[in-house]
Amino acid sequence: MDNDPNAETAARLHAAIIHLLRRLRLEDEAAGLSPARLSALSVLVFGGPCTVGALARAEQVRAPTMTRLVSSLEAAGLVEKQRDASDGRVVRVCATAAGTRLLHEGRARRVAHLSALLAHLADADRQAVDRATSVLEALMRGKP
Image: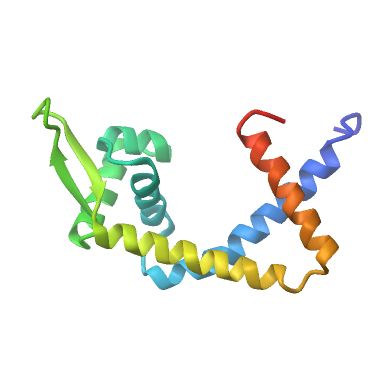
């Protein structure tokens, strides 16, 4: 690690992201769902309907764990199960309007919190964060 010129930046970025996510997680408490339930709901809202197995893979949990999460989201009226039109054996889980609304409201709270933090920055620093965000977005798309 001592020979890697990027290691210190990577370590600082990692720490900053962890602290930022912890701070934003406080905004998610208003939703009344566990982080695992919010995460699964997010996959469905932004990724579209999928099977319990695909959802479990996306969330890196076992199928029985995801089945329990989906059951609790279904009981709360945030997701519903639908049979595939072309293959009735396949059941897909999809977000309901209430689930979609809950997730978008949470996103709005997190964005508002971030916006308030950014408002404390000098213009040059805010522009630097904007540029860094663009670079990170490109990096995550695999286009550094």
